[in-house]
Image (cartoon, rainbow, N blue to C red; front, side, top):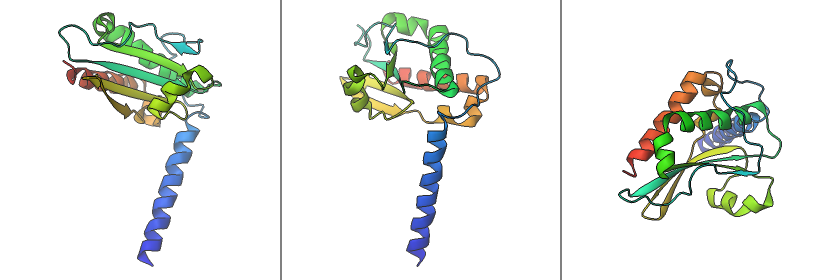
Length: 171
């Protein structure tokens, strides 16, 4: 009896989590300050140098964002704020190739292999610390929480901290 109750509670919690995550793309919530730059319109964007090991370094950090072909305000906001933070606070790292930012449209069949590698199924943000040729992919789910979607300063701090922590792993 206790196991059945526990299973039902777990199933309910999982259902709530899935609805919350799925609702992120249908959410109209957005930070009160407009995004700092326009989101990409191309299906695949990689304005940064390719992610290769840099002389004297021991790895790279890839920030990878996947989105659906039709995008909501929250999806555009996440991409825009991540791009803003990388361009503003990590220019040296992107210029050296130590850090890259890539954006992929899941509606484009050309992106199927990379989506499969990251196991991306919707609008999702990942940080991949590549060290010694080995991928260490981390799914960044917190960016969809209202705490971050509705507070630009908190969102920016989260992204900056995650990138700084990741860069420390490849120095």
